[in-house]
Amino acid sequence: YRQETLPDGSVLDLNRGAHVVVQFSAAERRVLLVQGEAQFAVAKNPARPFVVRAGGVEVRAVGTAFNVKLAGPNLEVLVTEGTVHVSQQAVVAPAASAGSAPTAAPVVLAALTAGQRTVIPVATVIAPPVVVPASVPEIARLLDWQPRLLDFESTPLAEVVETFNRRNPQRLVIGDEELRSLTIVASIRSDNVEGFVRLMESDFGMRAEWRSEREIVLRRVR
Image (cartoon, rainbow, N blue to C red; front, side, top):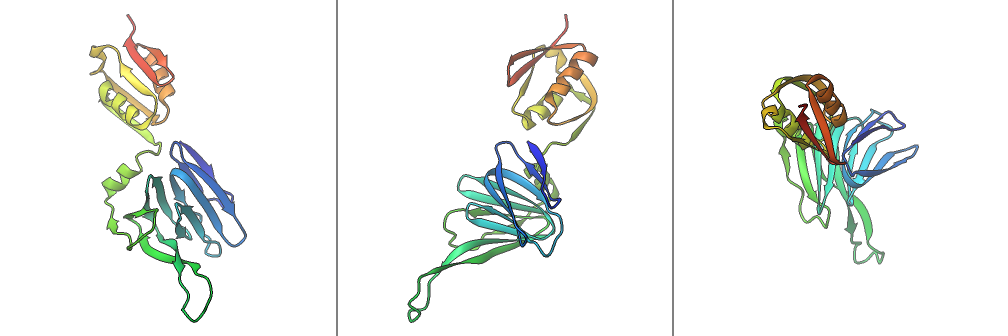
């Protein structure tokens, strides 16, 4: 995970493995999502629309917040603030008498407002995408990959470890069964696994064994 501030002040959160190419011009702010998932908090500027292109689909906004995920054959768009237009280039055949070649023109597939999401095939679109409401719990689940401050109030270590493992590539393992019910009181960022491990060693009488770069075993100091 990483966060970037773009030249216009917009904030871009990138999930692990995501790759974007920023292509800003005087008339338009354009970002190409090559792969993965990203959340965009767009700085308002009506004179320069903000366009995210992924898999042949364009998501256009002026000032809003939305999430775009390119996964396999589908593109998923979730809007958390404002409105975005989702469009795709379509081949338009000329009239028979025109004698010209087919041209490509953008076709608006859907307009999404805050609390709505849609999934679009990135192959040829044969029908308008289905736009459905997204509840607050569902939005939280879909954006759960973004780091946040975790507050643990007398939370069992087993539950704390499960929370970290769900959000990080590094895996925490409880090496002693009696530690599973140990209650933890702490506030720490969800992506700060090493900081959490240091806290367990300094304040909770544990030692950490690094089996690999991706697995850490927590044991009680004997």
